[in-house]
Structure formats: C-alpha cells, structure tokens
Image (cartoon, rainbow, N blue to C red; front, side, top):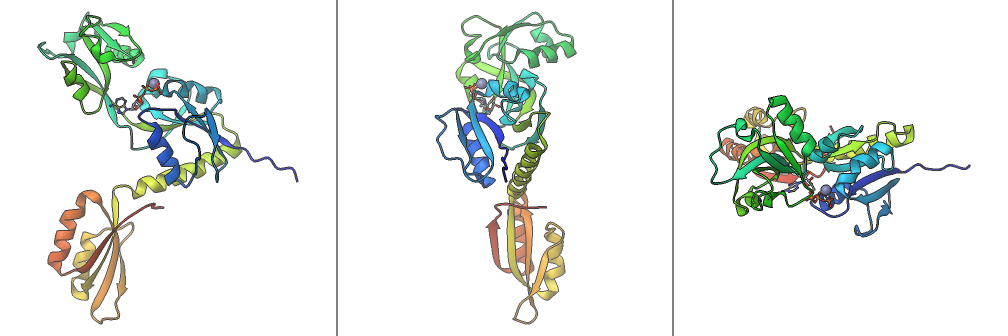
Length: 289
Ligand code: ATP
Ligand code: ZN
C-alpha cells in the first residue's frame, strides 16, 4: 500500500521574543522538535509536522500563500499585515500593548494632541485606521525599528509602538499617553487546508487547549471529617463537582478538586479553618474538558 502522510507546516519566529515560547508550547503538546533554530526548517520527531523558522513579519504572507499551513506570531503583526488568514487561538504569551507615547515634558491634552503631528511607527496600517476612525489627521512616519528614538532625533513628535513594561519608553524620555490595543501570540491558519491537514490542526488545537486549561489551576486533595464535607464542597467547585472518596478511617473522606491559582490562598485558609487535613496541592500539566 502506498500511503503518503501529509505533514502540517508550522511557521514560528526564527529568533526573537516568541521563538522560545513557541517551541515550548509545541513541547507541552508532546511534539518534539530537535534542532536549535539555526536551520530554515526541520521536522518534528513524533508528529507529522514540519517547522519553518521565519521572521515574524513574513509569517502572515507565507500562511496566506500556503507556504506554511499554520503559524505562531503576535496579533499585532497579524493586524498590521492584514492578510487573508484565519486566527485560530490565542496562546497566552507574548502579551504586550500598542501605545502612543510623547516626550515626557510635553503636556498631553487628549487624542487631539496628535492632530497634524508626526508619529513614527512600524505599524502604519493599525495606526492610520485608528486615527481615521477618530477623524484626526496625523502624519505617519513608517520606520522599521528603534522607533523609540524617533522623537529624540527629531523625526517625529510622538511614537506608536509595542509596550510591555514601559521601561524602554522611560529610558528614551517618553511617556505613554494612550494604550490603543492589546496583543498576544496567536495561532493562525491558511484558509484552504486539505482535509488531512485540517485534521492535524484539530489534533494540535486539542492539545493546545488542554495545556491552556491546565495553566493557572491546581489540583487539590484533602482529608476532612464527613460533617464538614458539604461546606468544603461549596468552596471547591471542581470541573463538574469535587470527588468525595470515603477513607478507611470511619467518619472521614478524601476530597479531590481543581482550583484557580488566584483563589488558592483564600481557599486554603478557609479549608484549614473548616478542619481539613493533609491538604495536597498539585500542579496540573494538562486538563481535557
Ligand atoms: P523579527 O526578526 O522576527 O522580525 P521582531 O524584532 O519583529 O523580530 P520581536 O522583538 O522578537 O520581533 O517581537 C516579536 C513579538 O513579540 C512582537 O511582535 C510582539 O507580538 C511580541 N512582544 C511582546 N512583548 C514585547 C515587547 N516588550 N517588545 C516587543 N515585542 C513584544
Ligand atoms: Zn518582526
């Protein structure tokens, strides 16, 4: 029988802020990718996948054309390049915002401040759409990088750029005056995948979702006297409801459930007050719902 297995081609950033996290995500999905990212492409060991290492700016075009089937990159680049691709899933890393910033000594008077001003950016499309909707006339100076120095060298009156902590702005004598849009890494896909590739994408997506579901959650096991179990159950919602297992020690039960990281300390304190003992808190690697 002559059976060819189709491989799905995934494009990720060659080297930059998203590279390591993209490879880590594949690893969490059980997909082993051997080489460092020095080569242009490589193959996964245990999943029908080929990995292309590219500049993030080029990924939307390659995915649109089908050179790659799917890609991982920041939403900011997806919006800016505006190619005919599908955004499949937010991935929960590479979080940042696109903001307007001006020299710190300037007095900011609201968006009208930018009327007839020059703004330097690598995101001219997103920026011009934003100001068109607001009906404000701005001069956009498109530059490829080091946008934060544009005001200092007299190229522009303000900048529109990616901000995460804001320290780069401060170092360059700028202040953030408007956060326009939030961005994170996403998985995008070509719109005309073959049935075999669609199936592979679904398989991958299933794994990504299981990984994301586990993030920010913990598995809790504890022992408690039967009479307080109903109160404990009301604190531990679980996926459906907590599991309650009788212990050999009569009058006691073991309760198992899933809690959110954010509620962790509050819930643990309350559980102790109720008389829970032997509380075990375990990280969740994957969670299938
Ligand atoms: P390439 O060589 O691939 O074009 P790049 O210089 O465009 O790289 P990076 O600086 O590595 O890109 O950023 C990649 C993506 O990481 C950004 O497009 C954005 O989505 C995300 N990101 C998250 N936080 C930041 C940040 N503080 N500065 C820049 N990008 C960030
Ligand atoms: Zn780039």
